[in-house]
Length: 181
Image (tube, rainbow, N blue to C red):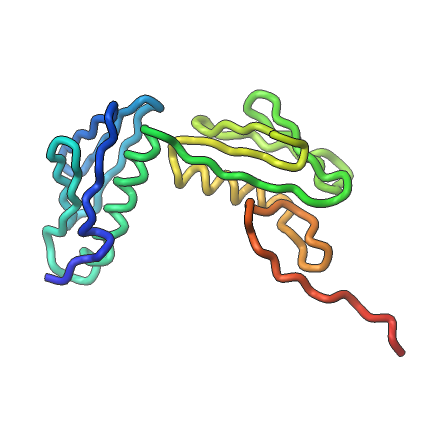
């Protein structure tokens, strides 16, 4: 049986985190909260003290494909309850800025009105500067989706680069029109 290279790796459980497996449900509890995951059929999760192993129980294409993905998802919930995840968004453009108040983000993005974005439960935001927004949360998938939704409000445009981008994101810039005859 050919196994996934990612799926073969063991997951180390940090101190202070407990992982329980109940059939197809995996729960992780740690200092930052609790997360749960439902494992796909054909995959088994074994917890041995401070290590977790994800194994294939069925042979087949779909089971092979799910093996590495499930190992990564289990690893993400363990890391989420122990240290959490962080995404940084940068805002570029004249007059573009962000301000955080409670669970809402006020964004000025060059529209005729300010844009208000409500954060879902479990995601926290802080505006380090008016043009730098830091998002934190335990659930990696939810955090990535929220960051993508905020970026989607004003994606960076290719001519001047104005808009919201991820930290370190490389943009392909285009040359503007030339005034030749």
